[in-house]
Image 1: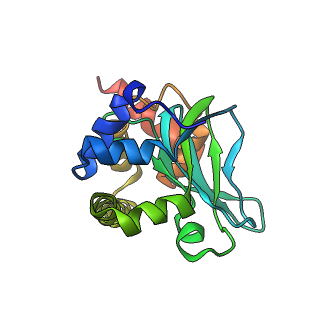
Image 2: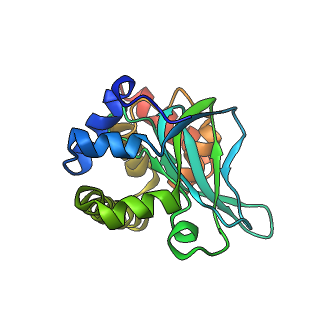
Image 3: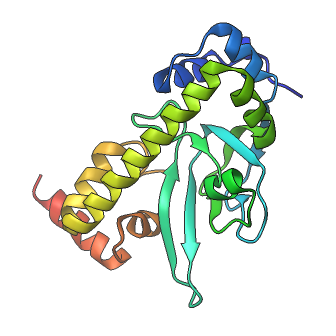
Length: 205
């Protein structure tokens, strides 16, 4: 069942933080959205499938991760609610969606969560007929590219302590909600390294 746009004004304001969306366009977007709940450990997207759903995170935290043949996991993105300080809330397996190809990334709920979901083919239809949605999508792609570049810069140039401090600045709400194991994955360090970094930082206070 489509959502009531009047009950999700917070999402309308979130969309406007990316690029201006009129109230009329918001009503059009709301027609293709529905609410879905996830339990901790559930998957929004899985490797090997052709994905056709995107979402906007209302509550909870998701991670996008890869796994090699030896079982080692690499967390590349944390998706967080629109209410967070620096939200990455527009969730989806973007490469699979854009190319209609087999998906190569898992997206998993790290907490119980809620998402406003929609079918990507319906979103594409909106893009093709609504200039505001088209501009919003273009702006989102720019923001993701900029964020990816910044994350790569931090990963390649910052020491573990600097990366952890940056994480706490960017995601102040996350640390007490998910396991330190996943935070270490996201930072590209081992849980033991993270424990040492945290011990050093907190002992200095």
